[in-house]
Each structure stands twice: as C-alpha cells, then as structure tokens.
Length: 113
Image: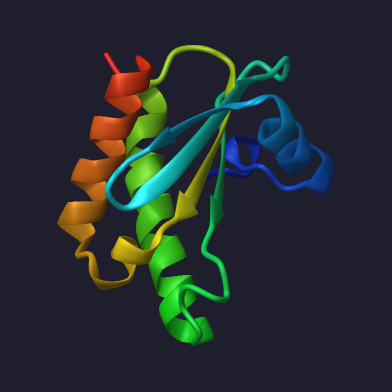
C-alpha cells in the first residue's frame, strides 16, 4: 500500500493537477503530472464509475495500480503530483500489462531513470 505521504487525498490537490498538469495518454491510462512543493512524489488513482460499474472490480484495479506505483516511488526523483486515470482498455488488462504500461508512460515523461 502506498504510504500516506505519497497519496493525493484532497480535492484541491487533484484540481490543481487537472488544471495545470501535463497529460500523457498510454494504451491503458491517461497520466496527468504537475510539480508540487511538498517535497515528495504523490499519486492519485482514478477509475471512473462509467468505466467499471462494479465496486469490487473497480477497487481491484485501483489496488493493482497502487501496488505498481508503490514499487516505483523510490525510482522517481523530484517533487511531482501524478494522477493515473483509467481508460477503457485497462478493464481487461492483467497486472503485468498495467505495470508495463505505467513504467513505459513514466519513462516517456522522464520520471523514471
């Protein structure tokens, strides 16, 4: 589980990333990024209700994404807020597909070494 310090929790934090952040579309996700002044990298995971109707399946996908992000936290240098927003293709994706897609997306942005 992501540590509390590495999670976006407040609505205003999400709004600031949505308004001023840059966007990268991958096969499974839309990744929005913005710099912050907190001193650590923070993540938010969004799986829309329209995308996955059942709460159990939606929360399972969010847990899978958070687990991937938890392993990537030490590799990201800098102070960023990152929102990972699920797209239609992520519904049927496996854990390995999710991991590969997020790592590729963050590498394209330049966050991973």
